Image (cartoon, rainbow, N blue to C red; front, side):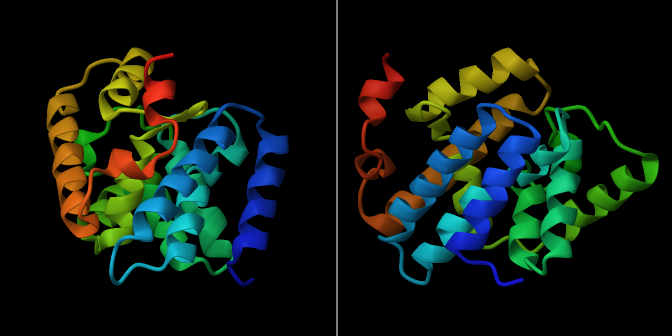
Length: 199
């Protein structure tokens, strides 16, 4: 099945019926942030960036879960032949390429855990992986926000973990990288970021 805007948006619509929640609006804002930033980056397809952002959490179709949604998304996309989208379903949660930096629970079998551990260690990250990692931290279900607001939002829900500070530092590093690529603050590319961050 070809991955395009129509198939991706239909997939998200069906997934939201299967497991309704704020995650779908979050995914739409992540997709828009990816698109807006990719527009200013040489070598990135605006369309691909949008699709990868839209589908990064598609594994939530299977129900409420912690790290299991990463594998559910990977398998969902692999089944449809969407290889890069499948990779990003896992890599978006590991800006530091080490499964031990997870902030969630490994609610999966031992075999699945070992598969994901090896996958993360050996995945070839590119700018699409990094872009979704960044934009995942720039989007609430209500709109774009400062990184710090999203960090607090996630930490309230998941708690503080040994890798929390290092994960934040890595996202700031990725932000600086894309600001060099775009020649501006990423916040300049996110309409309503000020209003949504301070509401």
